[in-house]
Image (cartoon, rainbow, N blue to C red):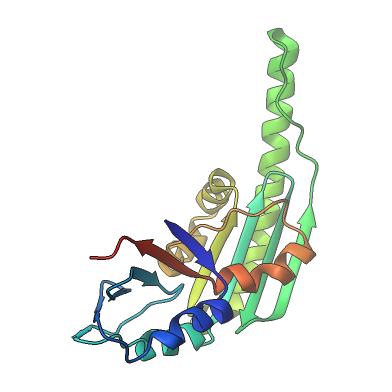
Length: 208
């Protein structure tokens, strides 16, 4: 069963395994640890370049990767709001948050529903264009030093936003594999984001 664990707790869970009998395999950005009691497959949030096999449990390369800080841009967008920021490690160093009204779906039919749909689509477009402008303004100057970009909120809204501004296609080039589903993006959500950003995926399997 796979779960996401905060990096401090992940380190506490994994560190005691160092040197125990078993087998360790580092490949494809993951580490696999096999003991007589359990098998763990661990994927850190950022690139794990280490590739090796050990006839013992060797977690140090993984712990080093988990502990490393990164410069990361965050683009969290839903229909109704956005939160854009830059993190150095777990510190939010710049950000901009905004909200705009986007009506919910109209349940009735007929011409009034069509007018409501067009109005809703225009509200969404205005919100997404604003998110584009803010993303370019906040992340653009930091582009060369960003290690990664975390995309989150609503997947469809983020995709539509990037499609509206082709010059933001570079976000996909730096995007982390994980998409971060978050509630309505606000400053408090952005400030709590480092916990999820640095969380480690741990999959506990049956013993080999």
